[in-house]
Image (tube, rainbow, N blue to C red; front, side, top):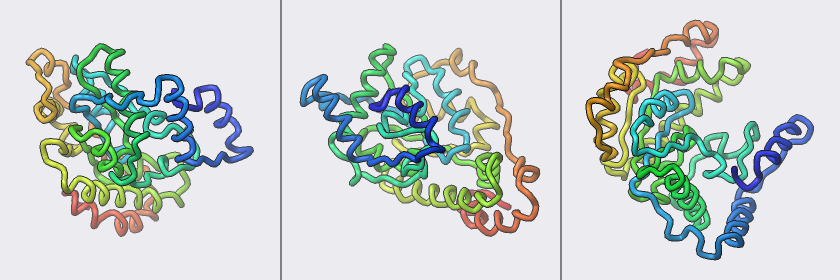
Length: 279
């Protein structure tokens, strides 16, 4: 549930419009650590670790949800999707924070209390689920690859990416047109961070999936991913995966007003070309 608890988070959420809440991430993480130490002892969680945990990341609305919903059918996996209250104990839905703004985090940002908190929470979850491997999908971690690797050195990280035009369209459907440029920048900057932070990671531990390919060949993509993650499988398991998935791309043409198309192209086209897309 996180340090704040559901009732407190709801109280804060209900009062958002009346009085914005300011969070000090470091102070709240320290408080969380202190509470857990008082409960379980000074060395709680220090030895906790997971065997090759698997993390699915991607810019929000890039296909992380459909990927994890397919990947998670493996019987060895304990899947805890999102779990923002573990990654950031101060998290409250709808609040402005570095977490929600996709602010990057690096290996140097990891504190001992973060390692202890996150390892302890996920190891307890795996034991509770009586599984052998851990799976987490969290889009916001797309800019925190180094951070995750510092906490879990043997982690397997899967990055899924998608045509930026449809990412922007999907995110801004219920937003004013003025937000389009901001969302474009988040897509561009997030993919820059992916390249920056994954550069020194082995291809055995970090690999990428193109949303469009996944929709066309989900069985092949999941089979390859299971191999990379060192998960065994048989034909029965793979037969549970659909032969193809609906590709929702192309909706940007009707979803984004034509007067914004030039801005969209100016912002996105260079990065789209880098990632194998043509306008």
